[in-house]
Amino acid sequence: MTKDGAYNPTPVLNNACTPCPRGQYCTGGPGGKPIEYMAHNLPIISVDVPGLREMFGPAAHYVPMNERFEINPDDCANKMIEMITNQRMRTRSAINAYARYIQKYTARRMVSDTLRLYNKVLGLKK
Image (tube, rainbow, N blue to C red):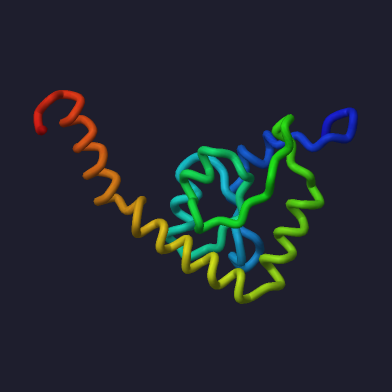
């Protein structure tokens, strides 16, 4: 919290993939952990910023940020409570997270995409 009582999103973004007890959900943030959690079928709750929306796509449930890039703690808590108490939502999110992992983030896929990019940049393959 800041002095004026506003929520500072920096800790949430830096520590954003902490699984809930018993691995019932995780929140999305930068780095490799979100991919790891998708690979392990964990439901995703993420702040709604372009980079994370690109990473998670329809796999995550999003908590909005305001124009000052602040998260309302009540919105975040409500989304977590909903995820914990709604088994259907939790199951669907976990399935979507794993599907997103298979679609975009397997090691084979990422290596292939990286090699295609390098080859294009170097003009090795057309």
